[in-house]
Image 1 (spheres, rainbow, N blue to C red):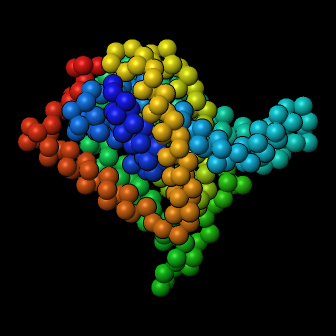
Image 2: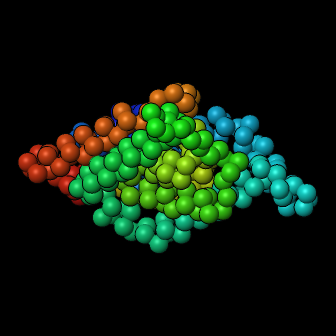
Image 3: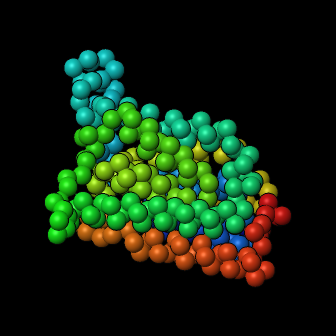
Length: 290
């Protein structure tokens, strides 16, 4: 991998990690359209450490408060009813599904799941799911001629059941094209949470999963055509760009709909099917050089 490729892929990772459009799919597609080798699951997981570092800094006050309360609750029973302490446990519980499924389906994640036809399908299907969830949220928030405004849930109402559902939604993102934020936000909206609550928990829930995945894949970094230098460079680029995207996205969702992302996902998925069907793009483009 050249330094230019690593710069572009780091930029793509930073731009797409927090948007509900799938960063892993866009890394795969960028390489396929450019005629480069597939950067692979290890490169993707490690560069996500960069974007997750941006989450740690952006939500540093929330994280420090949650971690502090969680540790204190281990020895102080009066702290166990504290919302922040409970949030610490809920992040741990919600991380279990992706941990178990990630290890179980590791070979599929690094192989068959990277087929462009599957990515096209997940882009479209999950785009439609996000669209439905967004419309339901908008209906509750605005009401209507014969419908009163319905108050949506905040994170203070998050329990073990919903935390696990969020976790299983996040685990779906093991398939490129699903989108970690897209799946968890869609799940949150369908369960009745506000956009801001669903997005915030989505970002917090991703921290242990992404850091563990990146650490797990470190042993495979530097193998094949991807060396350590470009991987680290891409990770730094992803961090810088990712921080800016988080700040923008958290402001965006307070007043805007997710429909632009829904339309983009569906159109990109359809375009992929057209290009593959016409023989312009191979569903396994770039894979042979691993």
